[in-house]
Image 1: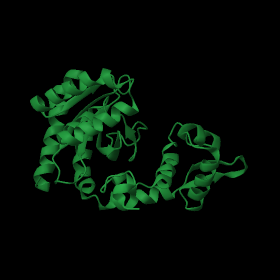
Image 2: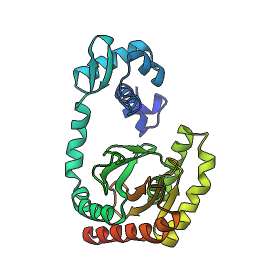
Image 3: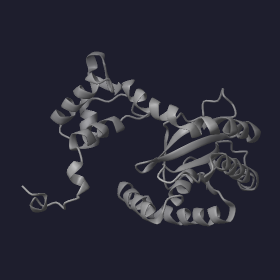
Image 4: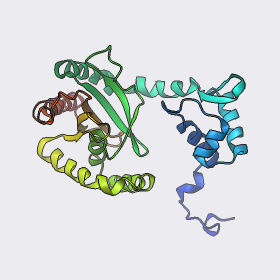
Length: 264
């Protein structure tokens, strides 16, 4: 049948979309630090897929090493194959190697965590993370997701996009979390004003009580993924005034220095 007669546009990208692959990734995304072990019933409930479909997909992912079956209970955790997928990307990302010493120096000087993040769907994902105190358990790991609109780094990333990309992302975010979206728009526009005036934006207690962060978007080479950095702390003794007057400007200086070295 000619493409024009089957109900889709000649260049309709949805014709190339692999539903089975999408469903397999839906299963993998169900696992989290709060839900590290899940059974087929859990996965069916969380994805809305039929149990027979979940069983088939989970078995396939197990055989490929992306899920691991935990003995007789038949439940799964993520397999180490998931980690191996990210390794080539992380090792080929020259910015991580370039930025890490600067991030570490800033973390030690200011006694904060310093993170580098980019966008994944409607979340932020950390691609590098450095903490001042390496014995602390509060450092998020590489790959840790963060909220988009309620985090400083999420807002910085969105405002680094062009208008078309930004509108599309905000539309997707409003569909994923319709109950949160209206309340977060004011803070989102406040972030833009602060980015223009100071070069960074701020979040205080929005993602977690007592947790503060400032974030700076980075100018990147065209067609590369957006990148932003944040300085974050769960220390209640760090006042908002210090985040604004000292930590924010120091992060801006670090990011601008990296841009100079990269020539962006």
